[in-house]
Image (cartoon, rainbow, N blue to C red; front, side, top):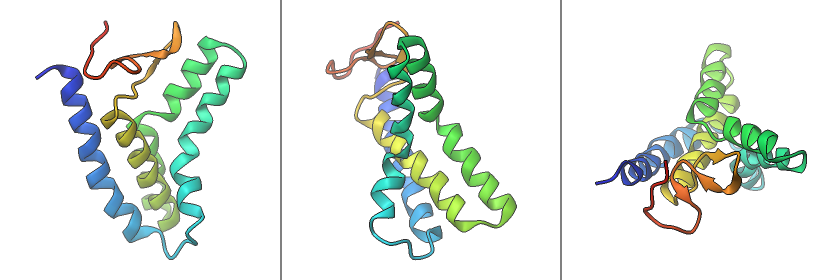
Length: 126
């Protein structure tokens, strides 16, 4: 199997691990909070309004597993279950993106990712 395939499997496993954590710690959020929380990492794409370099940077920062993990760990440290849930949902978003082939962005353009070009399933680009 290729490294891209492994990263896509890893993404799916992150979704399977983080989703139950989000559900267990969300403390009865209204239904409409779920889609907002799930889409929050995509706010990083707003950096593309400035230019490709800033866009790639802000998108990538918001699409790291570590960003969601950091939120969850801060929630654990402060005893804030809502923050734990938000971090877990963040990881669900990033994991789903990876599972579907959406990788971290290169400064050459939004469609150029570390998993290959968007739309080229299973491709690798160095």
